[in-house]
Image (cartoon, rainbow, N blue to C red):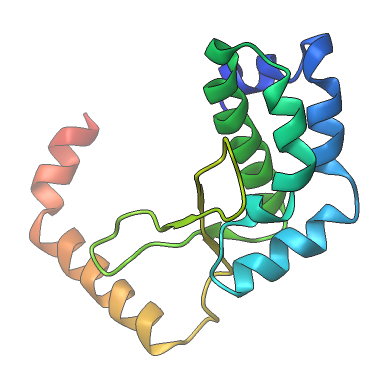
Amino acid sequence: MNPSHAAFFERPETAALKRALTRPEMLPQYELLSRLEMPAVQAAVWAIEPLIETLDAGARNHAIQSSGALIGDLLTARGFRIARDARGEKRRGRVRKARFVKSGTIWELPSEGGSAHRDKVAAIMDDIMIRYSTTLAELAK
């Protein structure tokens, strides 16, 4: 989580929002929705939307983004990563039955070692390292 989002949750008026997002029973829900390829924030939306509503309009968007960043930190610590589409773009999904939170990041567990996809990506990266080794060495300087 970047410093801006971390500082957001240090404010007294956002303590309830942080508690709602970090309750122990939320982690399995975030994981389950991620495995179902749905935004993890969907699990918390009914608890956090009333809290977001109490904030002034200018702080609402930051609250939504900070909430997503906090959920991301929780899932990353448990081995998840942001799911990406075939073009490498971050996957997002629509959050249902929500007034303020309209979409959220989709998370995934990394593929198992030795998978065909992982082997293909490794081969591509090896090829890039060989082809552009001189360029990469110059950029590293």
